[in-house]
Image (cartoon, rainbow, N blue to C red):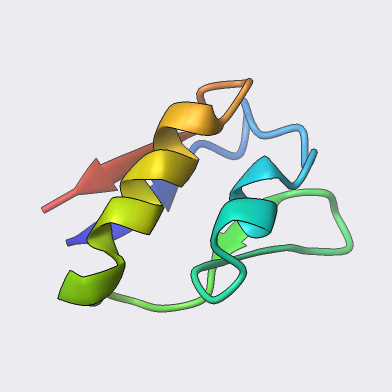
Length: 63
């Protein structure tokens, strides 16, 4: 599984990065970027928490 970022919705507030800095980084263009191609099984819950916490609903988990 991986995290997909809708760049049109992302406002770069960094909630995802604050929840899971090993999975997300907000770049210089204020867009969240996944740090890894695949979500490690032991980090799935953190990724899901970040997706749910995103205020602009810019994140989703894809198979």
